Image: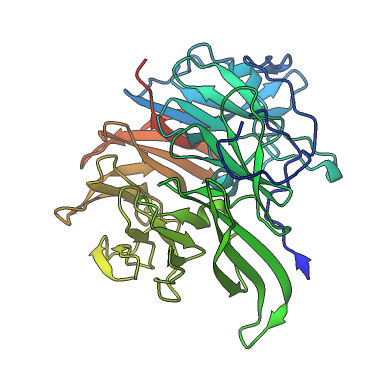
Length: 435
């Protein structure tokens, strides 16, 4: 049988950190010497950002993470990592090439679904992954950093891009490398500990449960088609005790399709359910969601799901029962949505018009939907977010043909959208920590 690999290649970097797991370690030889810990990264000597005559105004209490092209002295444009407002003491020049060269690739959705920056549970630190290297093709990766949001100080954790999730205590992360699941402390100078091995582990699916008890891991194997439905891919979902002990097989799935994106496996906010490739399982190995229900995402504050059903976006339970119908009219073909921080309102994009893409706000308590405003001239929208105080909407817009912008508007009916940052891709929005 041949092993299917996820869309990203395996990391060859070795972290610099100490594990918090208590189980006996699996003997694993790191794939490369540990890089030198660099509290403050050295700036790139060749990258220069284009002048910005009018810096964008920050949004109160909110930190925007985005990428924008920066051209070096040789005329090569790279996708840089930036924040709004800029972090104090943050050496932005060291991050000018974090997301690789601008080669005209016009869809960042898969990359940021997998390598999205991860905010620590206490909101003070940010794990920012660069790109994965591909040694067999002569492609070098870019580092993974831990950034202190209160000071802007950055410390390199890995020499390559690593997809990881935080422990709920915020003192460790978990990730997969070369068929091994690791936990590793974020203390400086620590070393990784291997807690589970399987030759077919996928590196995009290491997910620490919100209650801290488990780490979900996924192995996947491609084989000759079997049965009437011609399935050729077997996923096995594992629950690995975060504190050590034997892994438990939660379920297996035979399928012929998969989206190969990290967000297809996720825990419910209470840690009692696992959403894995459109199926929901409880911790007793029961499949709860009926077959054929796709397009699912957890609501961030409760064990309920947003179902992107065609022309009927709705909120459903873990067993598929409808809780609320969000909107019955036709909507934008690339529907995006975001729940407000207080959990009371849902913003989502509607079907585009000649004026652009309308953004609708659905009130979960009253059931009322109102149009907040329209993003002008937009064809596609890539991301929707709320400001920290829920007074503003933030939209990352993809215009096609490699053109992007970030817009903002008031989160109330009849608002006018304003362009916040030109030529930028919105990555994420996080609370700006109080210093």
